[in-house]
Image (tube, rainbow, N blue to C red):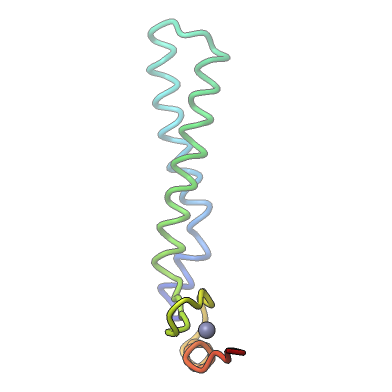
Length: 102
Ligand SMILES: [Zn+2]
């Protein structure tokens, strides 16, 4: 895993949470200006925060994760990892030589 991936993994959650919280606060403020009850605004803001945070986490994980799959048709063996190059190669070989009983 290169240093950019490590940095992305390390800071993806706090950054996602801050961005999601900011978006939620903006939406909550707008809803409050329309006299939406605070309990309803809070619920909407919480949903926006959790959805946006989860979305950004998924994007960060996709950018820093490699998936190695068995190439035999019908086999669903797969390994997902965010490892260093040597470990990555090792799992790539394991997936390529995945044993089958039939
Ligand atoms: Zn297989």
